[in-house]
Amino acid sequence: MPDQEPIPPAPPPSSGPEPGPKSTSTGLPSNVAAAIACIPLIGGIIFYILEKHDSFVRFYAMQSIIFGLAWILIHIGCAIVAGLFWHVPVLGWFFGPFWGFIWWLINLALFVLFVVTIIKAFTNVRWEIPYIGPMARKQMEGGAA
Image (cartoon, rainbow, N blue to C red; front, side, top):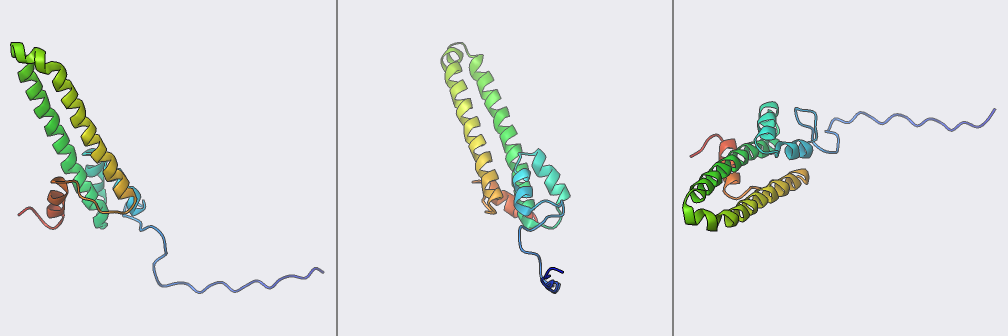
């Protein structure tokens, strides 16, 4: 009969929380839920509705909603300005190519903000987009002043 090692006793049950990433009401880790909530407008709306308790995820969801609406308004404003310039005879020829470059830079800047926000959320850093973050924080604190 081979020598058998004694089986160690089971550890006592712990009364504290399990170490590791905090889980949200969606079942996702907090940082993953916040990163997904950063998808402008759609991700924000979904996670703002689904997440009821985690203020970190709810903040990023609210910021995403405001950022998505701002992005849409910026696009509408750029389209109006481009349309006005395009229909003015001399300005349209001169500003047409220039305006396309400006529109591209605006989209690039908005995309960079989007990527930075996702990275900050995924690394558990509460980061506010300039101008938009304070509005989201005020909404989370119970309304705009």
